Length: 424
Image 1 (cartoon, rainbow, N blue to C red):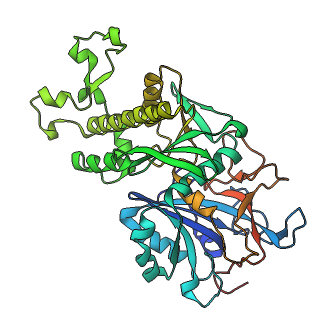
Image 2: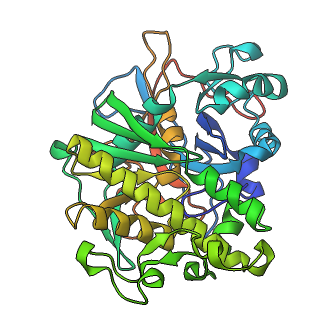
Image 3: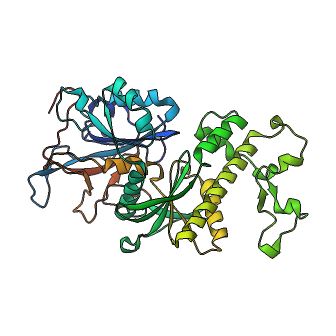
C-alpha cells in the first residue's frame, strides 16, 4: 500500500478495532483508489486528533429517520498490477461482516461496494471469487464530476495555482463555478466540460498520460514504479536530451514568434544527431525529458479545449500530478504560454481520489427510507465539508498524522453497520 499526503496508513491497533460503514473503490489502468469511512473512536494515539464518538446521534433538524455517525474518512491506493495486495487489504477489513452495503448478514451475495473505473468491469469476477463482494458499478465520468463538484463546493482551499514555485490557493465562488474544464490525468487523460451537478460532457482527451510516463519510463530506465520514476526525474536535466530553440538558432531566441532560446523545439530531439545509444544517456535525464514532454502536451491540449468552449477555469486532477512541483510548473507554464497569460491551471489537493469520492457519494438503495450518505461538519454545519485544510488550520474538521480526516456521516436508520466480530 502506498501512502502520501492525504492517504491514510493504519497501524495494527487501528486495524483491529475499526468499523467500516461505507467504502468505495476506483479501479484504473494504473492505480486502485479507495475511500472508506471508519468509526474507530477508540484507536487514536497521543499524536492524533481523537475521533468523535461512534455512537449514532440524531440529525439536528429533528429527523428521527436519519442519524449521524462520527469517525474518519481514509484514502488509500494500490498499483493495479498488484491487485492482490488490494484484495488482502480489503480482506483484512472483514468487509464480509461490516464494510459494505449489506442487507442480510448471512447472505454473501448481497454484499456490495460502490466501484468505478474500467477495472470495476475487468475485475468484477475476481472480487466476487476472492471476497464474495459484488462491485456496484458507478459510471466513471459521473464519479469524477461528482467528486470534483463536491470538493470545489464544500472544501475551502481545495484548488490552487502553482506559479514560480509557490502555491496560491483560490477561493471558489460557488455561484460562479460553472462551467469549467476538468482535466483528469490517469493512465490516459479525459477532458470534461462541466456545466453543473450531473451536467457534463467529455469533450476531448489524449492517450498520452500517466500510463505513457510509466510505460516508456520502464522501457527506457530501470524504474519499476511511478514514484521511483518520478523521484529519478528530480535529479535529471532534460536539456541534455531535448532539442531547444537555442540549439537551432545558435543560442539565440526566435523573438519574432515569441520563443525563448530555452523553449523546447523537439522533445528527445538531440538523440537524432548524437551518435549515442540508450545506455549512453543518464536514466534521470530520460525521466526528466519524458515528464516534461507529457506535462507540456497535457497543458497545451487543456488550454486549447478551454479556448474551444470559452471556459475560464481549468481544474486538473488525477494521480499523475501527485503534488509534484516540476509537473505542476510545466503544466502551468504551458497553459500560461498558450493563453498569453489569460488562463491559469488550477490543481486540486485531493487530486487522485475524485472518482472514488464521487462513487462514495453515490450510495443509494431501493428502500424509500434509505438516503445517500452525506458528509457533515463537526461544528454546526454551514456546508457539507469534511475534508481538512491542513495548511490553513481549519477548525471545522481535523486531520491526524495518518492523513485520515475526522468527520461525521449522515445516514438513514435503515442502514446497518456490522462489527468485525458480531452484528451490533
